[in-house]
Image (cartoon, rainbow, N blue to C red; front, side, top):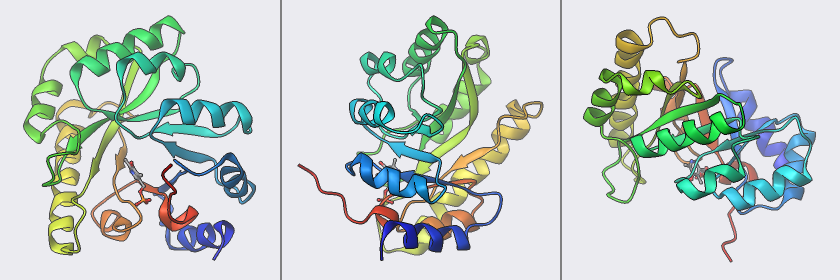
Length: 223
Ligand SMILES: *Cc1c(COP(=O)(O)O)cnc(C)c1O
């Protein structure tokens, strides 16, 4: 199977309300171009330097989504073009994104990353930390950050019941946040969850954005 076939297959299964983020990290610009030629416009990357190199080379109507852990000193290299940051995992990071976005006169779409997996290594707010953050007033003053929803990663396991439980907990938090703090927001509508191994479970649990790499581009080669 090649990239075009893989994309076609995933798109055929995708409900109309679910967007596909093609995760192109560690794959060359040529692979991105191949997907682009099939109509794919949203690409996800987890290293700023790699994303910026591709952004320079590739068509300007690509929407670049940043999905990895973001270091504050790297924000400035992508703030002028990034289309969405999925991985706001601390209040300090949100403040810094707001500051850098203000400098370039942009309002940047962001998702709050929530820690739902059992692994310790995954970044993100706990469910309670997220509630606390949103119940506070400070985020409302960050006019250059537009909170569009939540993002999460399930545990990497074959136990589908556990994965389903974790996605459902995120979906419940999303609904609670929408009702409690974003009832008047038209932008708070994205629930980014689901990767190559688990996206059908994520979609069943209410995902609006899946982030798929391996199923489109094949295995990543880490150098
Ligand atoms: C790499 C990555 C993905 C894609 O993973 P695949 O298993 O290759 O689909 C999705 N989300 C995040 C945050 C990632 O880092």
